[in-house]
Length: 216
Ligand code: GTB
Image 1: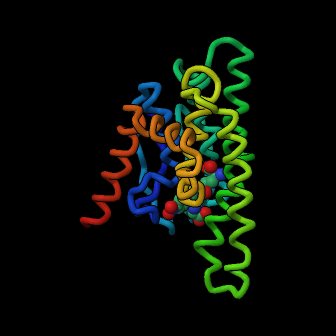
Image 2: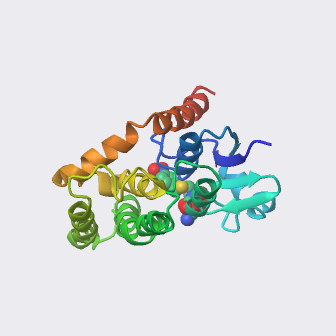
């Protein structure tokens, strides 16, 4: 049975591949695992049937042979552990690749999401303008350190891994991506990740969903 993941029927990102089904699609494409997608509306995401799969009423979910998983990072790790190609075989290198996955979602992503939330939701607040420099600075702190660590390497630790997949996904979010021109090696890192054929296939598939939703 092919795994089934859920994604927005009409993604608010308008086909930019920013919703979190994107990293799961990308991982499945990297390892060559065919999959099906079940598209859900916002109402369906909040209904009991979906909440039985995802307690917080969000996408993505992942179903495979009786296994139900949520959390995009956990799903990517599950895929990477079961198929060759996204995690090194050597135990120490494998542990470091997994550490980069956690660094992406646990260390780099939070200030990016906080800045994004403020830009999206707080524009009408009297303190909005005053808060922006601090929010930007917190993102820059992470980008500076990440840029220093990456240096002139192609990927964070040897060959492309699930750690890079998760990190590039986080760096694509607009509240970080708009600052990347100040960190040319990170901008090139994201461009390199986006140029991967597996990313391109995943992007095209989610774009097709957006086009279909726009047409109908
Ligand atoms: N930690 C969870 C995971 O990684 O799986 C977070 C999942 C999550 O945030 N899902 C979002 C969701 O279902 C969609 S991706 N939200 C609906 C809700 O919570 O009610 C987040 C997202 C949404 C929209 C954009 N965008 O428009 O650019 C980008 C990212």
